Length: 304
Image (cartoon, rainbow, N blue to C red; front, side, top):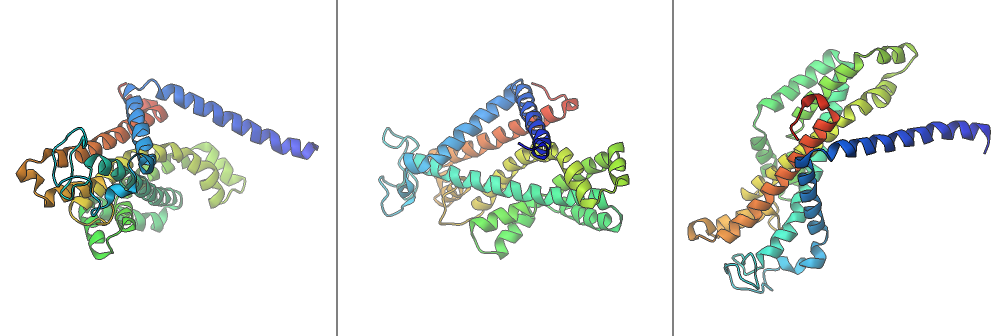
C-alpha cells in the first residue's frame, strides 16, 4: 500500500468507526424506551407478515371467482376472521392488505420528507426573496386542510396506487419544511460555518457537508412520524372510494364493508380486523418516532 493510499484510507476507516460507534450508542439509548421497543417489535411483526404474505396466504386470496366460503360468514375454525361479501377469507385479505398499506405509507412518507427537507434546507440557507416566497407557499399549504387537498388530487387523477402516494406526499410536507428550515438556521449560525465560508466553501459544500448531516436526525424522526399519518391518509382515501379498486388494502376493506352494509347488519368481523390493524401500525410508528426523537434530542425529556 502506497503512502497516498494509506493517507486516504485512514480517514475513511475513522469515519466508519465513528459511524459504528454512533449506531451502537443510538441503539443503547433506544433500548431504554419501552414504548419504542414495543413499537419496533410490532413493526417487525407486521413487516414479516407483509413480506411472507405470498407464501402464507397466496395471491389467489384476492380472487372473487374462486372464493372458498359463503358471503359474510361469521368467524369459525376454517375462517378465523370470517369472510367478506364475496366469500373470501378475511384473514388472508387483512394479511395481503398489509403489503399495500405499509408500502403506501413508506413511499408517501419518503416523498413528503424529501420535499420538505429540500425546501427547508434551501430556504434556510439562501434566505432573501427565495425564502420569503417559498415559505409563504409553505404557509398556504399549512393552513389548507391536508385531507381536502389529497381528496382533490386523488379525484382529478386516475385511481391508482401511484396517485394515492403522490396525493399524500405532496400535501404533508409543510411541517417537515418548517422544522428543517429552523434547524438549518440554527446550524448556519454556528462559528464553523463562518470558517467554512471564509475558506472558500460554496453553497453546495456548506449544505452537503455541514447542514444536511446535522438535519438528518430530525429528518429521520420526522419520517417515522409521517409514516403513520400517511397510512391513516391512505385508509381514509380508500374508504372514501378514491383508491384503486383492484388492490386490496386495509382502507379498501373498510370501504367494502361499508358498501356491504356491515355496520347496519352487525357484521363486526368485517370492520374490526382492518381497523385494528391500521390503529396498531399507526401507533407503532408513532411510538418509534417519539423514541427516535427523544434519543436524538435528549432535551425533549420524553417519558420512558
